[in-house]
Image (cartoon, rainbow, N blue to C red; front, side, top):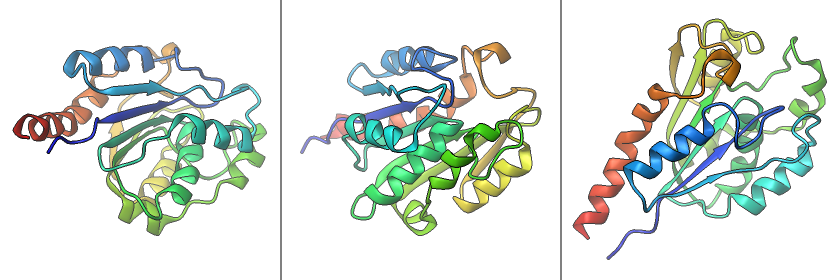
Length: 201
């Protein structure tokens, strides 16, 4: 019996696009590891002035496959939007993993224009704990937008493995993050386990 294709979704954040930061690099590296992976970098509309409902609709259109071979990598505001979407979609389904980079769920003093977007997100910790097999949160000790305590609260809420990355800023291109080896190394075991299963069948 062949396993279903492994899907990886990469979700950008506020003022971002699928071609920013380390997203293209990660797509390329993952393809090199396994050419059969279905990798999609999502496009969230009007990312300079994000609208909560528009982003939810965009997730629904582009994140169509959610199953036990699905891995999601999200950055910043994309984490919050994705987790709201998953809180609804995963009530009857499970996914393999989510990696939240510089994620948060509380209003940020540095970006008050996002307060209304953040307030609309409703996260179901029970669903997220029990229907996402692996949850990893990564944060930087010098993030200018998301203070480390916010990420620690966020990671605790998700019962996630929390990893601190020294001096990574907000994990953006301007912080030197056009590559992200640590994240790739976290992803590899999940890919290799799937490849091994596929080979056996």
